[in-house]
Image (cartoon, rainbow, N blue to C red; front, side):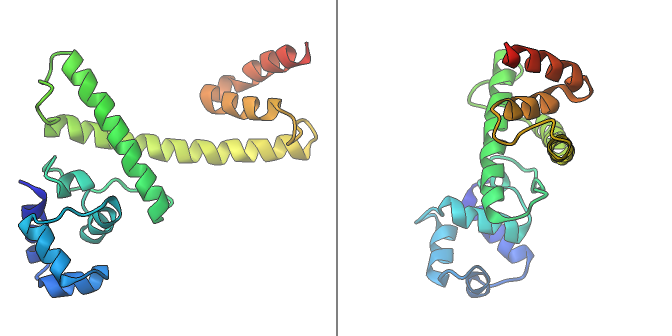
Length: 184
């Protein structure tokens, strides 16, 4: 299925006319009509608004997948959502290349839904883990600065934060190694 068909299908599922959809999205009815007939293609901002409005992924809108789910972004604002889609596309491309290299799919084939589901579940979990990790890192950073262990202007501070994120519970050992290296 292509974008035009998906847009029409989603609009009809919501029992909306082209005019009603145009009003909701603050664009012209003529543009909705042109999208549905394939005379013009939407830009990334419009795709993002459409995906948010219909609660589907951009890949689903474009007909790349039949998996409807939108990847949830904890921050929830549009700028982060645009970044999310870049990240999703990057991850999707990496996974596709890996599947091609392993001989599981051909280059011109889309990623099968079973792999997409696994990828999206993993991406969702990693996003939650990453958000939690950054909150923990920020708390550790604040504690280290409150206790005058770290100076915000010291170049080692960013290295230490990177180590905390990369090494988790083994970070203390890595920090000591890094501090020793920087003290030389």
